[in-house]
Amino acid sequence: MSFHWDNSYLRLPEVFFQQHQPEPSVDAAVVLWNEVLMKELGVYPAHSKELLNTLSGNVPRDLRSYAQAYAGHQFGHFTMLGDGRAIHLGEHITPQGQRFDVQLKGAGRTAYSREGDGRATLRSMLREYLISEAMQGLGIATSRSLSVIKTGNEVLRERVHDGAVLARSMKSHLRIGTFEYARYFCKTTDLEALFQYTLKRLYPSINGSSSPVEDLFMEVMRLQIDTVCHWMRVGFIHGVMNTDNTAITGETFDYGPCAFMNAYDPKTVFSSIDRHGRYAFGNQANILHWNLTRWLESLLPLLHNDEEKAILRAKEMLGEFGPLWEKAFGSMMRAKTGLLENSPHADECWKQLLHIMEKHALDYTDTFSFLAYGFDTERFSGIQSSLKEWLTQWRGMPVKYALMKEFNPVMIPRNQWVEELLDAMEKGQEVGFHQGLNALAAPYNPINMEVNRASKPEFDGGYSTYCGT
Ligand code: AMP
Ligand code: MG
Image (cartoon, rainbow, N blue to C red; front, side):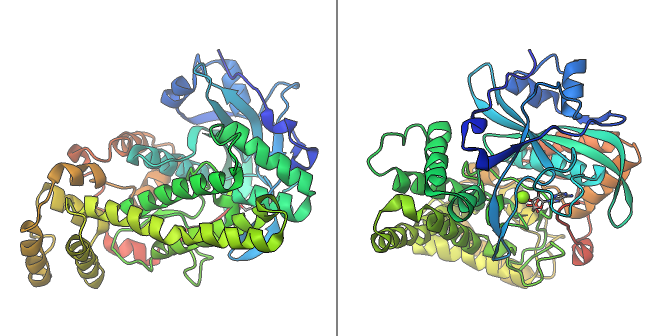
């Protein structure tokens, strides 16, 4: 069977979408094709002509595809947005009855494109495919990539690029920005409809609760904290944590300017437009809290008829963020360091290690994987005294190596390596890229420890990432 569409989203009030057909590719050529994921979704045969047509934008005339409306705070400023270069083919129901949005990115302009061209470069779609599949391999909730197809169009950015469409799937693209749109651009009945839809589609167990707004908020807060803690675990910097990029499912999505940190420094930023470090590695928890606050503001009319009471309740709920974050983050960092005790002494231990790592710009992935698999003293020479002291103290504590091996990847998609793979792939040299994807599917397997170790630390100094490429 191919896709099995059931577009529940189109049963929302019409303000939430514009029906829109993707632009057909002029000369479709498959570049990446995720057969494993297609099988998981129950979409086969994976090489049918029908599937290739659909994923390249040459969709059947009766397909009710659409672009979603949403707003959002971008770098703190509120604005109307919407799918400007993404078109939902629809919601696919798997043979197991799970529902996934399937979306084409880069298949032409929509009603929400503003001045954008609705297109995507092959290079940026290859990058999204690689990084989202790496996140999946790392065990982090994420949108997935089904395919990258060259369209035959040229796309103008800083130079002329090959154009491509990426097909991506996730449980849902509902985001904080969808609620902000309903709250500030639509009627309260639309906000209510969106809320009920969210419960029914994503959190049916909350449906019928006597405090559904509180329950939904707390559940999503827990999921988002879990996701962002995972980012911190592997050194992932999302790069553009605007409220339109924070999913109600807790899934990581929007892989524009993201990157992985190598040398440990909480201030690390790679995004070319993030000049003040708003979305720096170490600021991601603060921003999550900020985004959740915007979400609760948009939910206030549903929380209580009396605004003062609603605000009071909202503040109480937000007050729970700090303790929940500290608990989740502390337990993750203790596991990364293999520490079995939950004690101030254990917390002091990993904090000291981070301090040493920051001072000496030690590699985040290498340091933790060497703790788990054995120290490469040559690589860590020159910082021997502070580390030696720390190691002596650490070895005196109850440590579980198996835990560290579970929490610490031996490899991540290092920036220099990613760019080299993309350079080669753009030239049609596919072997290295596929080897890279295979390694990224097993980032905890020590067999992959040497995969991209040749990446030079200096490379990151001049590395910049971009939105909307
Ligand atoms: P993002 O940075 O991907 O979250 O995008 C922010 C907003 O800009 C969203 O509404 C996107 O759909 C829109 N956008 C980004 N790139 C383009 C493009 N090339 N054409 C049209 N809209 C775009
Ligand atoms: Mg976005």
